[in-house]
Length: 309
Image 1 (cartoon, one colour):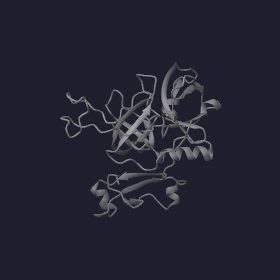
Image 2 (spheres, one colour):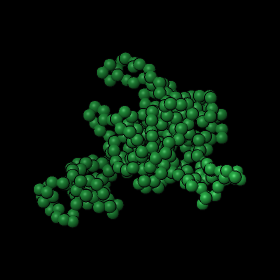
Image 3 (cartoon, one colour):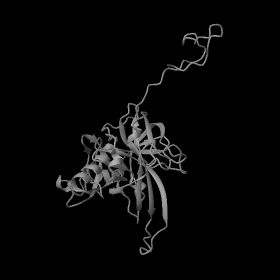
Image 4 (tube, helix red, strand yellow):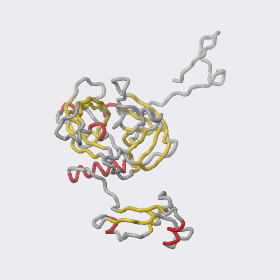
């Protein structure tokens, strides 16, 4: 029933929407969000000291979020369980913490799969499936997780702000990870939200929440979409591990310089990027791509001189 704030003084009956001097508030549709499939992760970690590898770092504790997939796996962010010495998981509304193991971790795509050997942990848990459809700009999404400020599950809401590419992890030893597709949202993603599922308004899972810029920028978070998740999960199920992510095996240079375009006879409306390196065993070399080739399009999508489609 719709919320009513005013009543007729004479009859004591609710005013009709037409007679009400204030805005009528329609009923809110009930959403069946799968809280039971979202778990809280407790981690004790010890970061390695690369300058003094024989010394054990100080132990630290943190929490994160995850959700259940088929095959009795739990999906979360790699940053949640990175350098973990102990991992425990707790079901929504429960009090028991069950020991968990890291089945696979991939820091490039910031994903990890967890398992739990306790059969009672899996009783009544339903796996979630991820929608292959990328959400549109300005589409409403909801994030479920266990952020700081409380012990129970929390729901935040926002819209899709941008669809871009970025490196999921910070560069180490001066080596940057390859950029991957990411979906920026303005829903609040605080410490502890990482690894939780992101839903459409209709309840479909669209990806994994990660990387809020706490203390640097407000209301900025990202979603790891299904295309990246599938690559990781399928590699684990077929090969048993996934510590890298596949790419074309080539490097390229932007063609924004007019002299460079003239050298390679690129006259309008031609645009693209210049191939500078090709891995001999990569799929790009197998497909016939060579150094000094100009990539004009990918899957029918025209490549601009600045590398965008």
